[in-house]
Image (cartoon, rainbow, N blue to C red):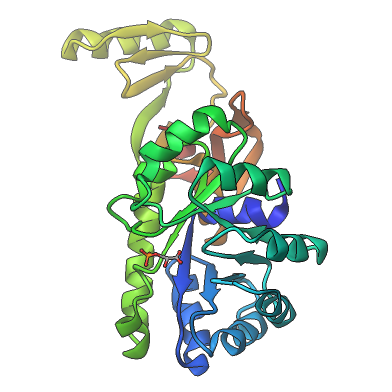
Length: 321
Ligand code: 3PG
């Protein structure tokens, strides 16, 4: 996948901004970055869009910037000149789409029917906007379409918010969601930057959905690992499950057979809705990962990976829920 679209998918949530006053663009972008969302689709629904894009591109270069509501070739040209990495539209216009592709930029056209989707895909669009998502049948509709258009990938906007974003992101053909819920007009006009940061953080937290998966105990030998796991099973009526490198007591405790298992005391496995998104978002906070510990699924998505270092004598790994 193209690098820009890969990053869209890793960030997972793209704020859709309509800004009336370009002087508010930079603090707004910084509030989103602080909330864990270094991305924005700045819509050409306001006259300030172009200046806002230019200001963010200059002052907040880490931000992945797109232009939204791009209806004409002229708007597409202005957006690209102002510094966007991708262009979004509410509908599918083959001429505007071709122009953006010819200029070497990413076009994410708005689509709502299999006919539009098929045409846009055949024109070379890797990700399609599904808009307005909720009004068009939401994820249930996309699952029906996706059964036929197996290589389609969607960014869903329109009626998406923190409450339903996981309905969308749980479906593997959806690469990202977008929306205005963290950048509402009154929040921008009132310069409620802290509130924008808090709503963004809450959305990222919901998307990643971290929770304890299991604790790994270093037992030092196969015999000890069996003894410890069986003792826990006997006490609490847990199911005993023998494995190659460890034995499980229920799902909560993994008893490691090898003396050199990762972590001085053992490991803590943290489940997440998306390991790849978690790697991206934790990586932004300076967390580093042990590349050789990465386990991929058949489709190339990361199923598990260890974080570098220990916390409280425990190695930490992420795992797909
Ligand atoms: C868009 O252009 O993507 C939508 O206006 C966003 O929809 P929302 O306001 O329902 O989030």
